[in-house]
Image 1 (cartoon, rainbow, N blue to C red):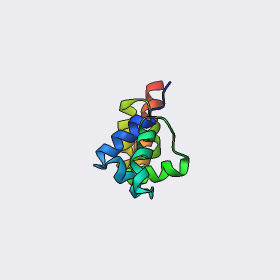
Image 2: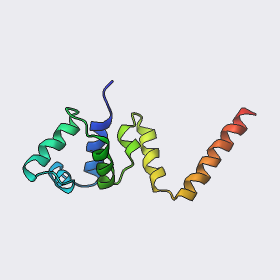
Image 3: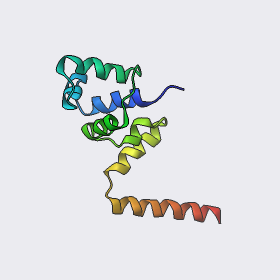
Image 4: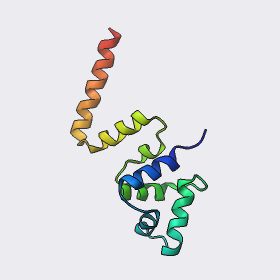
Length: 105
């Protein structure tokens, strides 16, 4: 199965309104290589290491798990969860766990 990373990376970059070259340069790549390098990542020809993934996620304002999510709905949930405060996330988690417990009864 193909990695969802290339597709998610491209979607996040476009949502951020950046070109491949702009993103590559933002990450510190040489201007004449930035676009080609980002193209390789978006086509799945090469995969960024974890350090670069972290920088990409920060630059594109998406959490790293989003970049690897295969399911569209779960990917959207990840983006929405990332917008919540830690307190809101904890409350939502507790609600979900309580729902599961009540379903089991």
